[in-house]
Length: 291
Image 1 (cartoon, rainbow, N blue to C red):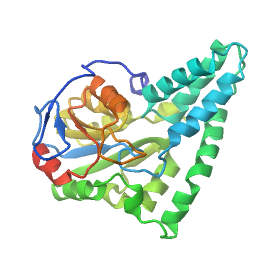
Image 2 (tube, rainbow, N blue to C red):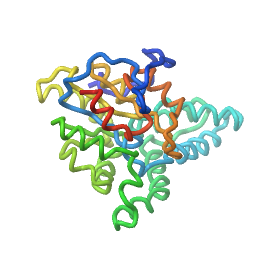
Image 3 (cartoon, helix red, strand yellow):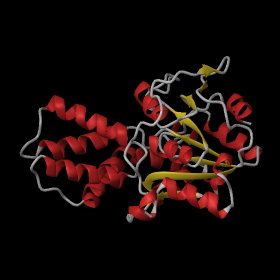
């Protein structure tokens, strides 16, 4: 089981790699080998196609800053800000509990007495729900159209893969019940059926690597038929580790201006993303290229 715990970010590929763009698109191809025979696809959730939790980093930053600022041996505000920014960036894609385990460890390093990681996770979740409740309710009562809270082009991408006969899975670091509920609110659960997997309180029993292991073993597949999509390093690394092909979504969630988030892109390239895109607005061209 230890092999399927979510690991820290580790740079195994060139984070500054340059590719070639498919003409008239925002699709940057870093490596083209391995296309054409995909039967299964794994998607991350938040930031990959869901924007319901856009801004979660600000909420997590606020909690971490507040907690670490209260420790006896904390650094300056400037140093603390830089440290937390980097910590969040380097753990994007991991289950929230891992980030809270990191927070507890950092409290100890600064001479403080930490709460249990699950307590920090509950506080973070409570704060985040205050921020996103209007979005969830808007989807529920139809005052917000689902396209407003989906990464642009998501539905075209999912429909295109379905037409290709691809079996799709969703694996998220967000708690399982929230992930499934929000997938339903966005109306994308129809593409995944029962294949939606979120985080469990017993984090050792849930990970994206474990989902991938089960996909391959249960269907008697080799990794070469697996296509992965994500905006965090965890899912990209997990797909690449079994020989799959990975599309990194380096999206600027706040502005949605089709500009690449360069820091996110660097992290995705560092774990081997084969393609970088800002969204799915070039879904037709991307599917044509992939197949």
